[in-house]
Image (cartoon, rainbow, N blue to C red; front, side):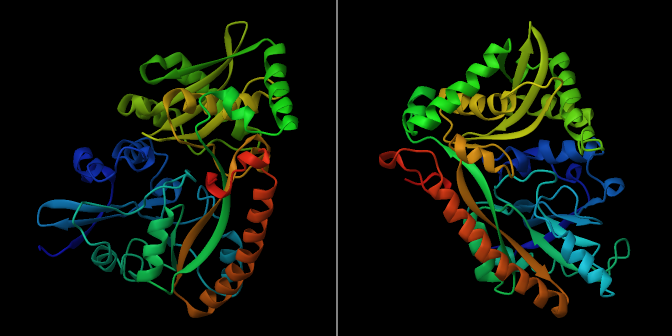
Length: 393
């Protein structure tokens, strides 16, 4: 078998979309060339925003057989596995935390593959070929890297990395996901819940309707320029309420719509026929991913309807098995989203910082696991339809 060679790409445009996407699969829109290229081409990702692309690729001769998104970072914004305290402690102690290396999808806390390989490529050999990607110390453009972080990788991939590199530190987090267990339709989903929760969800949906709001799901080419621009205004409002602009710009969303429209679902709320709120989702072959939301009006329960219930209905109508509505949000639990334990991995170069982070992660894992168990017990399903972690029955 031809030996694997590693090549670092400074931008997505350095590799063809067809070669990259051939390794991605059909359920992971965020790993697609079009998504990552739109981030870079729009200026949402790049040196000016503190994300320096250094994508890792593996080759057998002239054939691309492995891909891993990879960045040098000058901050920790847009990652959603927060290491600000690590950085602050290390720099107060006289160390230098940035730049660091990161394997993740920018601004996207959605679990999925991070290392994708062609059939026949041995994962252990691939990881060996990538082993020094985060240990480069003589890069004149960026300097020494303090660490490498693998975020929101799939469980099987995390386990393979841990087996190959036992020194990687594991950190736990929790998200909430909805899974279809043969509900058939939304009424079937509600029927699996306790009477109290069924009534509460029906009441929330009725409140939205009583305010004169109607919900509309637009897919692909049905999302016109006016709808896209309105969505972006709403998206910006969400961030402006926190005193800043969004990470992503309108050019990014336009590029996304032009290059992969089949992956887009826009949930639009209208008042007397005029759009007033919007939620943009991406969809794969089996999974719906809720991502971006905003509203021009204050309306009771509208967020629940647009970001959760419409997504569940869409999954049931399209035969999608899983709905990942985004990070955080304990309120999702009461609406049928089960807790899912996630693991990030961290390589820390300096042994002093590594020891401190290892102690922190060990203590945090105990707390996160206890929280996850408590969340499982709080799921609002009837005992005979009880759903476990990550939607297991």
